[in-house]
Length: 504
Image (cartoon, rainbow, N blue to C red; front, side, top):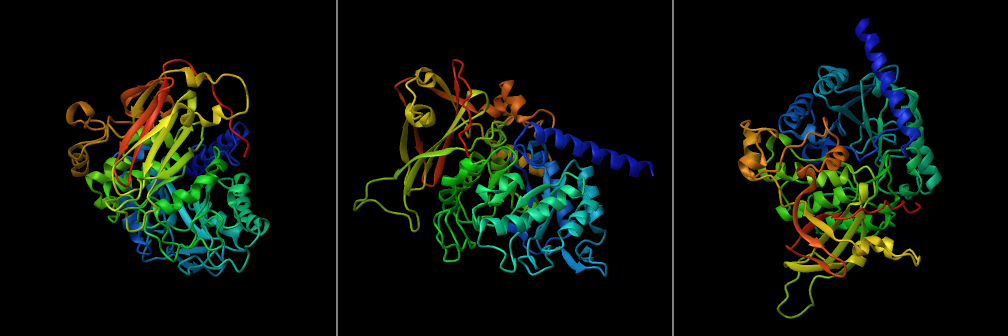
């Protein structure tokens, strides 16, 4: 009884904290003030999820230091259920989860991790298991009873309840209200693939919304099953490449805000079909877009290269920046002039692009993205970096244009393969395999010190490596590999003021 009372007290305190947070933030439930981070089984395992696989993965996430970097939620995707009991309660498949979902939740919580669950706002889930449409109150309470902390809520078999924003809003709000009524803080991740423009209305009832069809492990290959190339899309589909999603996301990224994020889908980093540079683009652009960072690979078989990408705290710090402002694409241009000696990619539109965004405390992040088939030198001006400040229509001087900025390369201190392999082998950890010993990224533990606090303390693991300065009337240049990216944090040598967010 004492344990039960303590558990109820802890839940009540957590709920009160979330409600207090909501009063001072834009989050409708006080959760996801920065984008969610975690792991989901679907991309790597599909329907083959089991209790053993889930808990073994969770343990590796702890062992590899990924939990301490912020990967908190361990999410069970589709195919977990065995229908409903006689009284209509969802029940797990007893073969896959022999000790039940409460046991799984308790084990994850004992590791300091959050428990994520899946259902669909339809009669069935996408894999044709039992859905939650019309059963929202009962299912939400079941999830709360199991100790669930995160719900991914899909869009399959919705019985035609789509086609207008209001119809889709009401269908998804039913679960939002049901989750809130349980009294347990549960992060609500809408997965309606961008149908009916959720970026225009989901901020008041969800913590994130999918803005596109499903990603797959390809950098730029078009696929007939992902027919749209813009965010205006009546058939979102699946098998959408990384660059397809980036280009669809660009016009709607500004719709995100703390507590309510565009979800570009799970990460494919480590699944084997892209190059290292392409995976760096994938991870970097998801982070800069302020998308949730949900790993989608087999963590138990992770390579050193994969671990070093997921473990880059300088990139994660951009994603977790408390200002919560996604980057803006400033320009696109052909990667090179077309001529007889220029070999084009099989699929790429051969674009380069430049992205910029403000960070907490007046810092900026910029990215040069090269989708073309050859290394390209790219250049940006001060007006490109501070585009929103220099195009306000005001005659007032833009002081950022007259300041000198230190430029920090956010991939220059990437963990080496030697350091990553030591962690995988169990011979090193994120705290004893350091930059001074094997030239790896310095350890960072966000569970002890938030990314915001670490940046305020000038933690070098979060800042990256200073490479140059960016002075007034000069340009910033980078030679970017094919299908590659260069990402920099800019920090003024003087003081700069905070810019207010544009209206949504």
